[in-house]
Image (tube, rainbow, N blue to C red):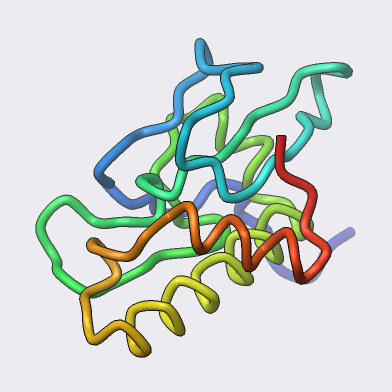
Length: 124
């Protein structure tokens, strides 16, 4: 018996885009990570950069299990691999924002994607 209660659902951002169950297989122009769904073999979600951006808080990025997704997609994105991938994307985006003297909302997502690929990330 477990000594503590483990909660599998956590708070999620209300972001610029909420990745939803119906988005399975959809490749977005601003895709920064991809993940499978451990309960649905063959299902792949491509995570858009907009899902890391809050609706009303400027210059903030959210990663890991707190990104903007619905209840169903959360089952796929709360795991360690997508948390690593969104964290790497956020770090690279923050670097681009600092170098360009801009906010994270205004970074060139294409340049972020290029940097991710150069670092070895797989993007569709």
